[in-house]
Image (cartoon, rainbow, N blue to C red; front, side, top):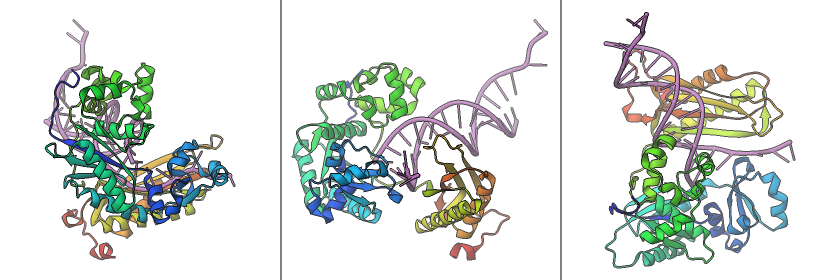
Length: 379
DNA sequence: TCTGGGGTCCTAGGACCC
DNA sequence: TCTGGGGTCCTAGGACCC
């Protein structure tokens, strides 16, 4: 049954910043408005944000910079290295502005928030959407789009529709049953929130190209063939809410520090140096968040773009003797981990550290037989 | 020559137990 | 002849998100 029962508990507005990193750069350089702008990843490796003009050139997210730099240059594009400090503080400004509309906000990512709206508002949903777009732009300089629906997945779809439309209205209200059906009839499965490339491929192979076709399958079939996550997504598209607003950010469960090397590494000593460095940075992050870790994962990887070279990728997880935040201990165990997985004769391109099993530093449970070294922890 | 980084959740399979 | 069955916990890998 489609759309027969609405669980009208909440109304979600998804607020999504336009080309966020590019928009942040433009706030401080307004002369770049309406001109092509792109932002690069670490090491200036690839494109991670594009202004509309750059998208219109056909430049894709993740395109390696070396392949498109000439083209961008020729078209007078301005290209930035990423500046996460700046993007983080702009994000805070946007969030503060959104709180003036509702206290019930979920910060979903650096450039997206779910805002819970109440239905007994005197203003129409269209008018509220308009206000959100206008106020955020006015107070922060960041352009946003708004999608409103009874489930998060439909709100995401609504925002997606804003992106696709030809006439530039910055919001879409998707609460009417007939309108939802009409939109889902042409909504590509690969654009559904929660459907990635792997699932989209499988669906395409059985001839399912649109959201409407997908939600007509019965629950059992989807559950067995694709798992609970897709089933939840399907239910949400039918109007049944499965995901609540998460207003309190969960304390994180793992923490990662990893980088690609600009030049491949072959020597053990160089790889060790990188691991020691990442382990130190990771343990700094850990202590900054007042957390401790119980396990350290080390991973290494060769370059997988180069098919001619032999490939190697491996990881190992080492348990710490007790929950700890000490730099010394984490570095030591990370080094041991690397010893286990290092193999001679490969061109390593990337390595990293993951700290997991995190806990609040005030509730560590030391092993009965091992005394935590307080001095190291302080250090 | 040159291709990002940081997260979460689910599932299948193995180990282990009674 | 016929060789159990079910539960839990852990982990690696896959899929997804931005």
